[in-house]
Amino acid sequence: MPATKKPKYTVQAVEFALDAAKRGISISQAAARYGVPAGTLRDKLRNKYHKEKKGPLSILTDGEETRIVSWMKLAARTGFPVTEKHLKISVAQFVKLTKKITPFKDGIPGRKWIRLFMRRHKEISLRKPSVLAKHRATVTESQIRKWFLEVQDYLKETNVEYLLNQPARIFNLDETAFQLVVKNQKCLAPKSLRHLHSIYANNDKESYTALFTASADGRLLPPLVLFPYKCRLPAEISASAPPDWGIGKTDSGWITSDAFYDFLKNIFQPWLLKENIQLPVVLFVDGHKSHTTLMTSEFCRKKSDNTRCSVPQFNPPNSAA
Image (cartoon, rainbow, N blue to C red; front, side, top):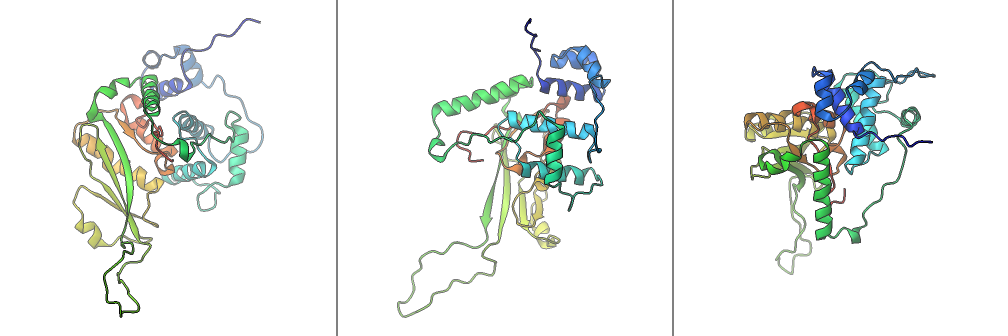
């Protein structure tokens, strides 16, 4: 039996080409740009390979589930495989932002939906990723070089390798938590005083999160600061912040998928436009689930020039994500 010829294009290239064609670029232009045969694109756009499914209809459409599967494949390819919890969070965010009516309790899919979703998409399976043990997480030169090569290969695969020579279009982002109550330290006090107390007005568990972004050419973007409030954020907090800062709230004060999505949409993207930074750009993030949801990934791809993904997600050698 003769060996079949393996296509020279990737699944991701096909997805990018289809997105471009759906956004108005001609099939021939999309085919040439992403190296995918024009006939293949025409067949997929005409649903030539579509098959009728038996059984009850899924809550999401075929197209919506295809988007989810594509995002899961990309996340796995770039070092951040999707867990069941991560999938639930992403689908919940998708349902919320698209105002889709579902039977999900509190807008979050349950285990039954996950099980049926996996059954509908046999190419996705539940697997255990290899985890870098703590004693192996020591940074070495070979690990750093390997990481840079992985990033370069990914950018080359998505036709944006040239960005590595443009530091104004490369960004790194991270957040840190600030405790509003200092930790106990030894103090100088009279020996005769039996009990020594330190009084603070704030709750000992209260903290806020600040998210910082910097470009490779040394510029700092306006930060996002999140406070722990379940209800409305006090007006005096918003009024005291610089006008270009992002001020928000979450129940815990920690970053969430919705808060990160809002940061990209309302702070990062407008700043790029204000500074005349040409798209696409590269934004490095860590593996926290709030950074890698379906809606965040799609937002980055849609806002980038020619719908190219602008968030290559790789774990650096010393990341514990």
